[in-house]
Length: 297
Ligand SMILES: [Zn+2]
Image 1 (cartoon, rainbow, N blue to C red):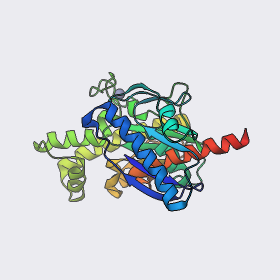
Image 2 (cartoon, rainbow, N blue to C red):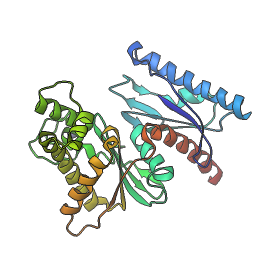
Image 3 (cartoon, rainbow, N blue to C red):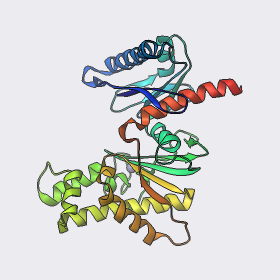
């Protein structure tokens, strides 16, 4: 877990990390989150002589932002957890915002990261799976049911590999860091070969690696062009483990996107800036948004 004390302008005053301790079960994870938040508030008092005015928490899985409920997380094991209420009680009833981890990360990238000053962007995180967030007017469009931006489950290869969501050929079965690791392990016969190793092999000109890599790049470009046709963002921000490959990813990806465009205006395809702190910074921005809404109201 990543946590931060965030000033009103989005600057980071203090950062900390802690393991979730999920091997000890869901109740332990929740207790760790609450303890971590309380310790962070105490850190604020000690360092700055003031407790935080509000708190934000960003979690994976399905969430009900309006009611502050963490509905379901396969990784962390909870169901219908009243996260906002629990955290508010623990922190002395300050306002608490609950956000989705990827959308919060996208929010931070949009306001204080790679999308600063950009009115419409698409944020794509290439990790174990592929998740995304639609940035518009300084916020994130979550959709009617909280599933907006799920570009990982856009089908780019009909009848392709089975996806965990039940469909076949979803983008994340082809272009996530896990998908590239799988494909490279299969190509090399080395079960430990991963996406980072594939990127290195691409850089050294290994033809088998180039095939694996280009397959992922092509799928990703198909997904981005689909999103471009629907949403017309000016910027596509790509983060997550696979984006660590830098130009090895971005150079062929920009070319593959450009060659697929017909009428669409080309988006700028840029690397994310905030790395794995994006979601915690986004949670901080959500907390500040709560306070500015209170003032407006
Ligand atoms: Zn899927």
